[in-house]
Length: 143
Image: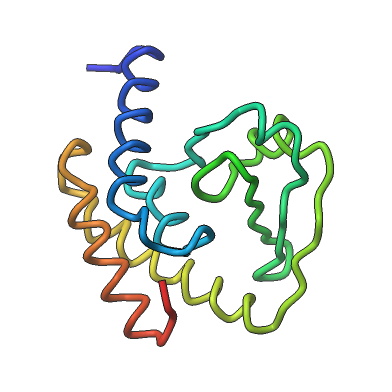
């Protein structure tokens, strides 16, 4: 059964509230926090649309032709469509250390997406966070 836009919005809001509660003590730009929307299929979860539209996006090319953009007010990486809406300007993030972390992060995301694929969507958050925690730690990446 397909979900309506309202149901999707309600799920996203509940998810964002739950995520914020669970990771409140973590640093603001935690990779674990930004991985959470992938548990639900992505894109980023908009929690403050005004801030997202008013601030520049931070983007990094982690592989040739592949970039990730983040915006204040949105949890997780933005989709291409979200970049058009929420990135009035972009600020390049150029850091070999961050590039290494993001490469490991994306590898972890792919592993964990496969691991939780058969879990019903409403039950994915805890297995996702456990998987990402394990995978990032194995790569020596602090979440």
